[in-house]
Image 1 (tube, protein in one colour):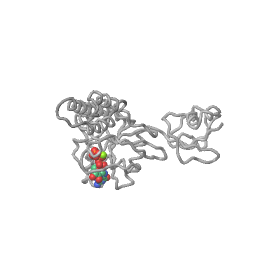
Image 2: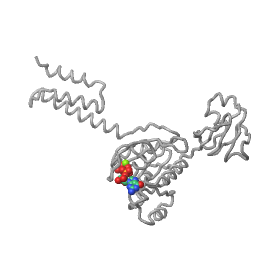
Image 3: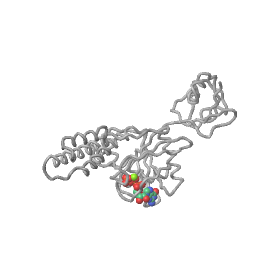
Image 4: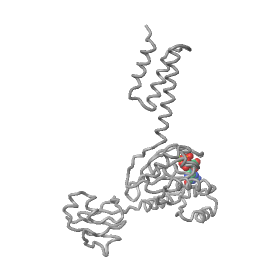
Length: 309
Ligand SMILES: Nc1nc2c(ncn2[C@@H]2O[C@H](COP(=O)(O)OP(=O)(O)OP(=O)(O)O)[C@@H](O)[C@H]2O)c(=O)[nH]1
Ligand SMILES: [Mg+2]
């Protein structure tokens, strides 16, 4: 005997408990497939109700995605790649990391922020492509508010602009970022430098005097290395190499500027900091190689430190 429509509705509701977003929509769709296909009467009403539920779940899913997008922070700093559609952001992300990402010669290839880790001088830094920031983003056009939300959480910005393209795309993006009240350390990567008309880079420097401009091409490894160094400078962090038993580690420790040798010790272990007796320093902050210093000595980018315990 077929179920009464009332019981059926209860069964449906029970099947939906705890299901949200896409999962809820999928469940509702399969319920729809199973429903008797009467055109009138209680089962037709039930069908209408299920369809309404699908619409509501969809709107809710979209609303959740639009209000906020979470990018899990990884690495020593987070640097956003920001620029008009088709500027070459994904191509840079791919060239600088291991990530496999869709690249297309059209606008809006990337629809959501994509994070990837890049290794700069032995330190991992997270790059995040922020796609599709368009005019009106601050008013949430193109889901702009959530994208700007991700950007707000970043430590610095690499603006990306096709060196051979008209400037308005970049100016619009910068206007949206400014309108959102986001003011982060930034540089401008003039992308596709291999393809740019002569003098394009110079013209860009003139028109965007407030940003350091760097010509880059994914076909030119040297330009990518230079970009990485500039990204590192943007993070404002310093790299310190640890030395023990006469050996210097190849991978440096990232530290905030102004860090002392005691902070270096603490980055190794709190016990090391506790038994700290001083340190020896080589490099930019040392008056001479191997200078012995006290706990308050500030280290600089590129220093090598041996903690004495
Ligand atoms: N010649 C040349 N072409 C490039 C370079 N970088 C990217 N491109 C091309 O530019 C187009 C757009 O590249 P994407 O990396 O998808 O650009 P995007 O900024 O991520 O674009 P959206 O995600 O759509 O906003 C592709 O056809 C790339 O092959 C480059 O250094 N040189
Ligand atoms: Mg892209």
